[in-house]
Image (cartoon, rainbow, N blue to C red; front, side, top):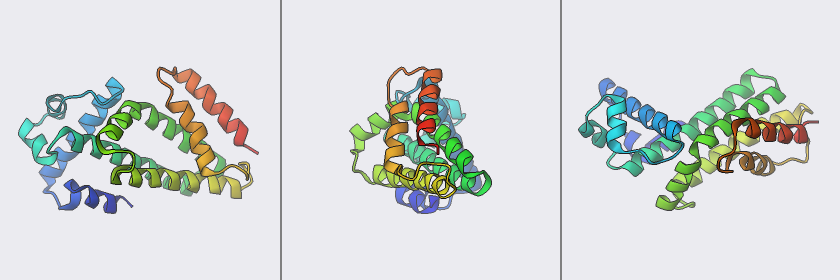
Length: 194
């Protein structure tokens, strides 16, 4: 799943030397951390390079512009969410897998709200990036929800689209306090549990 998207993004389509891969990973992690700290996309390339401990030239060798870096962070985070769903379905009981996936989704979405809107303005909601990431999120939600429904733990009439709209509402409200967000998520979970 991840390899196809990585190649489609362009940057990761060639094999990097070990040191170049380390720098790439440091840059993505630095951008991710800065975005989480600032709760949005208003970070500079200089800040990212400084945080990663690399020169600005190294950053631009991997990411020709700020948009390429932001797209990479967004795509990799969605891929991480999808990988977590697969691990949860294999390792946890069905209801716990669904609950943990939704907790992760809420945490992921809460830090991506501003970035999401910035990317939509830059590339459009029907771009390859959003088509791909939307598909991954729906597939992941379907995976954990189907398993919970098959086990009789979740209401059979709830669809993945219902679930993502309900939980999306918990995450897209600006300035929502974390405990209120958790209460709302708990209400959603109580509403879909058998």
